[in-house]
Image 1 (tube, one colour):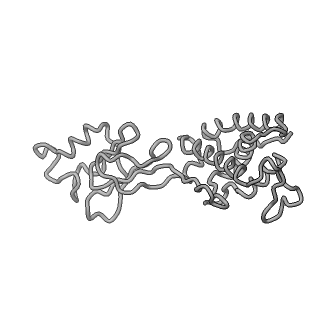
Image 2 (image 1 turned 60 degrees about the vertical axis):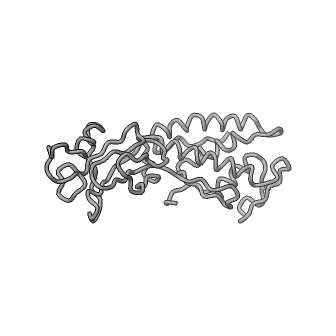
Image 3 (image 1 turned 180 degrees about the vertical axis):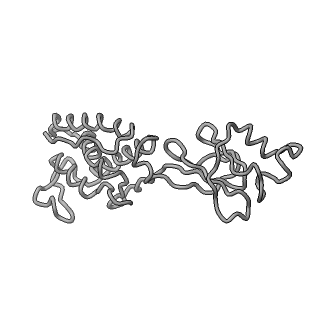
Length: 234
């Protein structure tokens, strides 16, 4: 992951300590020890952290304004005219097009007004747009695109690629799991993980306070915040 990514090991210690599940003397140890019979295995805490890290990433990917969204953007594989976009989160980004089969690279796509316009250029009835096909070298109509309903690509040219936001979540059992949210939002992940994990005998006032902080800050991330107010521990 890029620099400035949330640390699972740091969050694990923070969450376990906040839940009173960590043997304090082992906080800085390579493998801290849980001493809470109600939470005997790391998996309880692991899953809460992984879930909230994914929620933060989803909020970023869904936001058109987030400056952090760029870290989750990547080009799709080649797409043909009419192909459905691969699974992604939030709006598609830029489009680039290989104009003809032997082209050395891609050029920035030009958005057309409608799918109908794309289809007309492709069909080129009566050679009304010139004698060169839309997907041949020297075409006057190649390099245009339209994404319909945010899910299907239509283009003139040979192939197209779309910049899409997506991310993977570590499979269950991966130790340690790989997080992907910016470290600027570690407090949000921490608060959400603790807020989701109270059990009988916990400080419900504290977990409620953390749940409220999470509920207030996640919409800020969705709205495009670069950072959020730091958590003030009670």
